[in-house]
Length: 234
Ligand SMILES: [Zn+2]
Image (cartoon, rainbow, N blue to C red; front, side):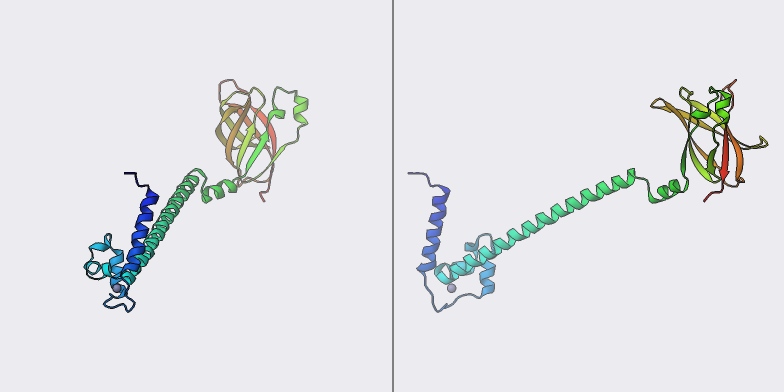
């Protein structure tokens, strides 16, 4: 016997259905169950197991038609519900992914407070290399003073080429050479440039002429001095 292909089998089922739909005409719908029962039968995994199917439907073409139509309707509804569930699950996954990315972004990015705090303390880059003591005194004296506001500052002091890394003493001296600030900061070498990041609070100092003095914190190191003018903070 030749094998039956899927298409052949579907064709066969359709033929039997067509036969069943015409074999038992019941134009007056005598003894037909109501739509509630039809729905119940159509919703079962094996409709033929339902008692009403056995007692009536199997002998009534209009009812067989109703059950087939109802079953098709239920199945397409289930397909839609599955599709909606899948879409919902996909949406939940996307939301979860977004929140993970957002939390990771929050963790790496500074918080609003940190930005506000960092923003409140301006960073001022100051190039001290022109004031290097290795230059002639004459050249050094003609350098204009650096000007900074009298408030809390983050200074980035760039030192002369070849200046060593390490701890530095930083002092702010009045024009009477009285130290009004005295602190330490560490110079770091990056890309061949030595610089000192230093947070200095100049708040409360009168505007005017001062001297910024710094030296490597090591025996025998000379102070390097830079004229500095404090202007009133905006
Ligand atoms: Zn019927």
